[in-house]
Image (spheres, rainbow, N blue to C red):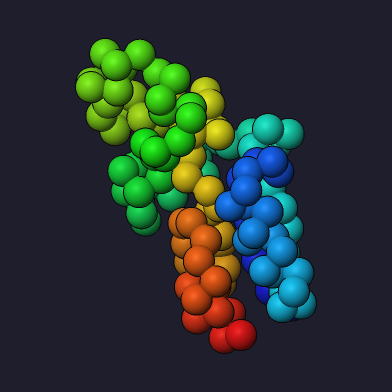
Length: 117
């Protein structure tokens, strides 16, 4: 049986909602905790190839707001990759991997469509 993989950090409210939705719908998944397991360059590069770095970089969260304005103003793909590898909690959450496809963020309707629930 294929299992979904959910990437993120455990204390994020959006992650909690996604995990609760999966549990309520009986969908088995593996949780990859960035804080415990990190995020490696090959995986991030594959995600960027599929989704683009702008999709993955969370520019609305606290970690982004803590960056110096100069850093935010100069962000490009190379600096975004370095930032996401050094601070994985700046990656939008959750990243869901299911049947060879990636999905970013959580909305109940989106997950219902993905899993046919």
